[in-house]
Picture 1 (cartoon, rainbow, N blue to C red):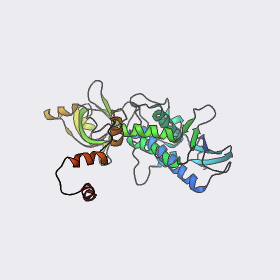
Picture 2 (picture 1 turned 30 degrees about the vertical axis):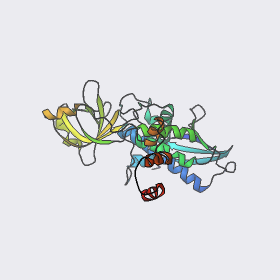
Picture 3 (picture 1 turned 90 degrees about the vertical axis):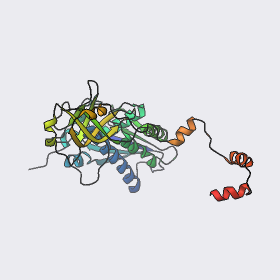
Picture 4 (picture 1 turned 135 degrees about the horizontal axis):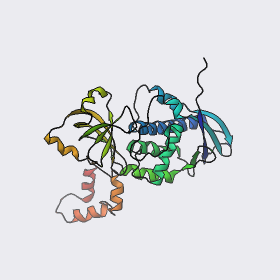
Length: 321
């Protein structure tokens, strides 16, 4: 019986400013581009499916391997233009579901490809959508890593999914903007939350925690916990421990459950959603915005000059090295 033909979407990738012969690309550069595109696509797909974009080691699930099985189907001139065919998710994900959470950003995820999702995530970041339900610190970091590929002055990557689709143009300035958003995005933290356990809307295998009438958190189980362990708590208050994952605005977009227990009076403290520890991690950027110029040699000389010491300034500075 012949294998089922998987439908694909063709993505057009145009490379400019890489000192390439017209219509050619070296294996080394192609390998680097392939790695960046695959990591972006997998990270974005994990964000849609699980609410957390972190890449995991070990053997991939079959549906994920099939979804990332891209094909280079053409190489054309006009700078260097690559034609990449990526499988439509409807044909690769099988029984896996992409549940609705918050405002669904794409009408029907299954009709696009993993690479198409990655391009959509880039579009959200370029627009500066701080409330995006798919952007977290790890996914933004994968986007920032494209800066290593765009290391030549004037180099850029243009990607589209056909003649009528929007073109995503990646260049150094775009990556710098994304880095700024990444710096402002809180890292995941371990914490506890108390809420009512329920099944996520339009899903048969994912959960949500209802903290109050307006606050719902997408929840996923750690691999060590079976969903059957939590079924007695459905519709009841429960305190769960685990890892909270945030978007750039500091909102929790998912919570990985690593432990649970029936709620008690003390646990109502955890009805408040945990706040991220830091919203800005780039200390150099903070210092720059505050016009702080640091302690230069002149300031050191001024302070040392006011002290009664036997050593010379040169001797003091040498001792500090």
